[in-house]
Length: 360
Ligand code: GDP
Image (cartoon, rainbow, N blue to C red; front, side, top):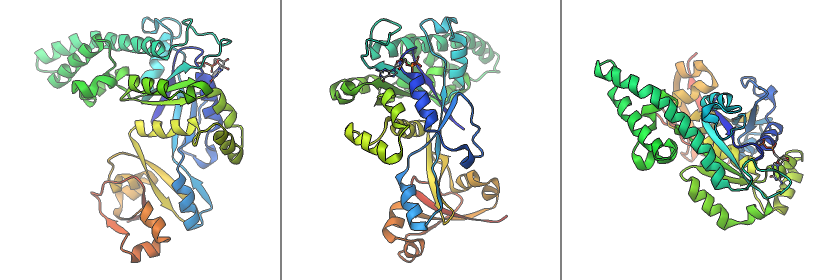
């Protein structure tokens, strides 16, 4: 499964956030394919549509899609030079498919900040600098080798050109992910180089009540990290929230003026940032969301349920979630002409409720 690495300076609330994530973890018994490891938190992707489907179909249980988070050792200034946990940190971060940077935006004078002052902007710069330096080191080794290979017609000139462009961006102090769009750098061209700042980023600002209410501060930080997504949450509050049952948690959130927990927001943003989407299946046994990549076709989607479904794919009966809800049942949706029969080239859309027909 694709994973999101949680990274940040020491003492910013990473462990607090990660512990909340692991307590929100899905039951392993329902997800026999998910290997549960100590440094991985597999959380459900909130999806209100599943509850609605379970009502229509009388489903016994609901199985949401999941999002996996990995705890990454704390980064420190000098990590790219192998300081402290540097090397382990860099290895962990290379393995993650997206990076969630946790930054401290809570005041609490009792909690020491490694650099002596609370400044999310400076923290982000410290981390980005380490990642940029590490990527530059990778390129300083790779580029001369690629140049030699291209000279003797063995290398890939497209890869070399993209690597040189990446190097220039990094030397100007920017991450590849943030500069890719404006610099027209095709990140897929340099995927083989496994550069860290080319991964999608998510920023979590760990803040307090004052911060959650401070819209001007939030707007400023959102702009700073764009095009990456920003989430503002109170890790301590989130860790208390996961201890409560559903009703109590909803009440606590409402009291706090929030309609969704920070963990739920993080799961949704993380899932999207990984380039994933879901389709839905429903029946008396279960209503379930299945994870696919954006742009996948119907047979590829069927393969997620079972590889035989992909090999023996014939067609898919697809009803849009909203159409199904409006009709009230599959039969009613069919008679209203809302059930579409789709073939092997159909590209799956978010909210498709699907039944596959296949040969075994
Ligand atoms: P890590 O080093 O990044 O993993 O940080 P920890 O999660 O261990 O948190 C460091 C300290 O900050 C601990 O004493 C936490 O209780 C405290 N802390 C974490 N999140 C919050 C928060 O949202 N508000 C406040 N006031 N303290 C927090």
